[in-house]
Length: 359
Image (cartoon, rainbow, N blue to C red):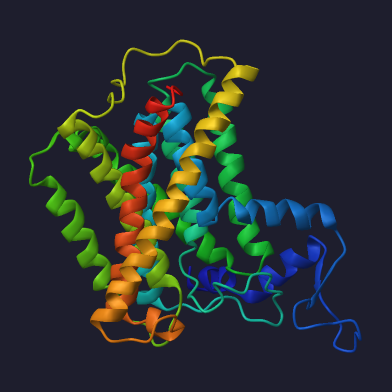
């Protein structure tokens, strides 16, 4: 068993996978080599396939896909997706900074992404997020929409597999990192599944519920494991957890103040998924565009205000990038900003849709 684990953690295994897919390190004597291009691509089908698949595991995909699901498909599904996504991402990010397993060594591995190279490797949070989103969507939609289960299962497996393989292709994770992420997520889904119905009813909790929604996530982010060096892990984790807190708080606001109609119960089954028509597509894109514009405006406004307040409070020079990385500044401004984004997405955007006659 120990020998198997060592082989799965071996960077050479990742390098062989890259070579089979046509990705090679640039020759050392290559005169065209630059600091930005240190690889040679001999199979552009795999290159674009896995770069696109890697983008499906990035935060930018989830902060567009999850709001789109809420505004155009089913708020009931989006709430479950957000809650499970936040749970697995927090556990995955914390596990990275506790285990402190290095990413694949380069050479022999070619690394195509630079932003997260300072983070640790085990487990792969891309693999965790993709597995959580695809299979939570599958499980939660089975009792609401009638469709061939085999088709839904195939799509979930293909989506999560492509994202997992992309982490090997881009040189960001070993096979063990990816398998660890998938197995941890499967365990968390199985562990929390009996409580999913309870999660659905959280927005009808007591008036003290918002206090817990804010205090507990902020405490978890502020007491994030200390790293030996700075990496974007803490900031990314705060962004995700704060967005989840904002979404949960937004649902509570909707229920408590009866601002918008609530998601319908899980039963009865909707027998057929409505066919996609031109009018439906235009309406969906319009709602999405309106929502994203409002979210971007709120994000920019709240971020600027929170940074100004924190910089003034701690007597820090404005626009000091290093100061933004300080615990007492980074966590509060990220948390306030993305909690506001979550509330905006679930409360104010639907209200704007209703005002504009888009509902």
